[in-house]
Image (tube, rainbow, N blue to C red; front, side):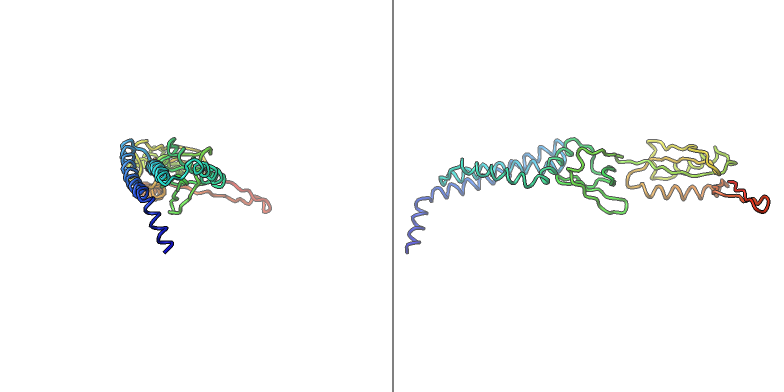
Length: 273
């Protein structure tokens, strides 16, 4: 019966403190959720990025619950100052042990606030490239055209040279025509191909012109703008349409040739054609 007597004495002595602590905890939990919802609604109206919204709401709720915990412990007569000092010392140790994680979080916040790139844009950095699909506090996820994913820790992004193509990209295509070709006809055919392709953007306007004079062909550069997801498909469609329309309009696409001449039975002359 000794433990029963101790239990009864405990509840008799601390019953009011226990009830008060429960009430404080429940009220604090309600207040934390309510304030968190208010903060989330305000951040949504400010068009803040989703990762930063989630982080701010969690921080607000954690701060409120930490204050509630202090009040609950105070109800039981727990000395708060030594507890806070101990948590501070432990926090320093945890901070040293989690330098990489904290570095990713700080870098993630920097990316979210400075916005060097956004979801949907095509970027290239650190020797990798792809379309940005997710920006989180710890990492950024890129997707290649083959649907493979590249996960980059955020601390690797900050401070690096990055090429941001944005939401559109410019194709860099080349086709060669014979030197005897009617160039206005060839350039006009290519322009009509681009105008008919729904993937090619009207603004910025496509760039079409002679880029170089080769050994056996006049090289025409074709540089239309397309949306990032259409990059690969547009390239295939334009090349196919160019071959078909050049054949239909009797525009020759030459290929490199070499002409061999036997001069005296022992000497061979090689001439590009």
